[in-house]
Length: 314
Image (cartoon, rainbow, N blue to C red; front, side):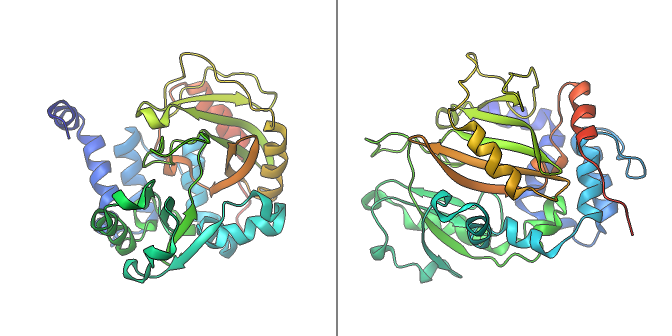
């Protein structure tokens, strides 16, 4: 970490606290879910969490964490099991091939893996290692990162119930690149540098989607579009790109597939990649940013909140 980064962290204690909490999520496991969410929401967003009459997108996500808990959600966030779930609904052709699955790092037979591959933990966010050249692959660095991820239960950070009972495993996936001549990866540790498309579905209907760019350059940008492919001035998580990215030719196919996967669910983000004009499934996310990332414009906080129709409690 650079000196300037250290100073920035010191000046932003909320940000530093959240980073530490994300790395050591079980610190406050003794606190019940509702009290914990109110505590972290106050720290992250600087305001009181209204669970009695939630209005904004982030408030409603916290409410859903507590009150919308279905067993199938665990399958849907498991990076191994989700592939089967998705393939059964939209087809195997949209799935990035899995090369293996293991319970422990030492079980991995690296000799059997191709020269390029991706390792992921199935139960969390961030347990990711990219190998673009096996002869240069630092196995001990990979081991440290993967084993740290295997030891933590991602549920405890944001109390995202779907993650609570996901088995901690490792999968290897086929390495995917938009560059046919890619040998030294443009991938990074977030999602591999691939341009991805995050489609936000509400009651099974796509209302907006995010196009991320420049991830491999370490300066990720994000541009939002509505269901009619019109660019929005929404700022949420990333700055807009200097040049508005083109809408992909197959965005309508992505919308169609996303709505199949999101049917019957109050709110679900469905992620896809588009590689050489072919669509691939990325992941399913119930709680974008765990509901702790602020939407800059108040009008969008309310608009996205209005899109979520909370189920009636029985």
